[in-house]
Length: 459
Image (cartoon, rainbow, N blue to C red; front, side):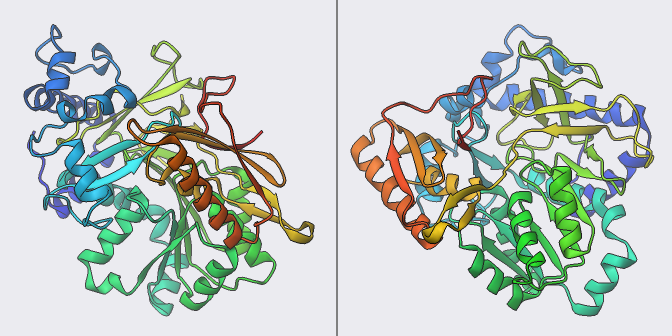
């Protein structure tokens, strides 16, 4: 099957797959998986070695061994299928170089970074098809939730103004996607504003009040904090739609956001590795975009978990990405695929996610006032410090933050610790938390009792 790269072709293909029925969808999956495996074997020395001895043609993903981010990053230059791409060049030219977030690397790849629950930083490339598929398929599948009079009418009446509340200062997927949209469209360049969750709430409130967004996008934890500001009357905006992603949207957060802003809340489930993985239907249930992404709930031994049961982790396959194949990749989230079809009528699988929640951490400011800090914001400050390989930032009290660091090979541990300390103190002071004590532990970052690695949390 030959997939067209153009946005219109991807949109038409996504619409067809959604209406062709479960059997046609399964055939599409098998065909695309076979094409991806053949491509990975031909272009990636890592996969060629990993798949040695396996059948020439693969239709069932369960015959393929799972892969993990640490192993893939250790063999980055053999993992990618373009010999012009090396980890050293990406770090030099993109992560520490002149290529801004959202701009193509080598004129044809989008670079994003993610750490995930394992704590291992991952550098990811998406080719043009992978980037286009994620963007277009999400929009096609979200149409039933978005194209409603209560959403379209206010946007047409007041104009399209989009506020994107995400982590900035690095090559994170959400920020990179927003900047790419602004770069490619003169119309959207002035209508899409990227706001950093690293900034104090008061500054975000002032900028949002000035912007008056009709569409608000961001992490559930960040938007739940803004909902508190809206309820208190400090924020006064009237978006027609709020779209969330990057973390689990809890029922409580959904109700708070919807109640505060008085508009629908669209949920998306995605990761930097699989940016178009799932989107909610009008019933509020997440549907996997299974024509382009395979999702396999598994137990601790990577054995399949049946529908209706919660997995220990989940293996994902991005059927669109050719430059950096992700085939049965351990994403680390706990999920449950529904045993029943969705009442909305979609043939796409329904998934419930347990993972990547982002409840704010309350710290005590001068005078005893509690100031909530987003884990994503705090983690970005530490994780984006030069020389940090892995880290944990643990709130052990209302005015104590304990940091555990694992410096990158060759980095001076003392210099890394000092840089993290300076960045954290500046960040906390900006939020009125200059009295919070930052303590550096001699212990390395470690998983909790369940084996999960959490970067930022309260003890």
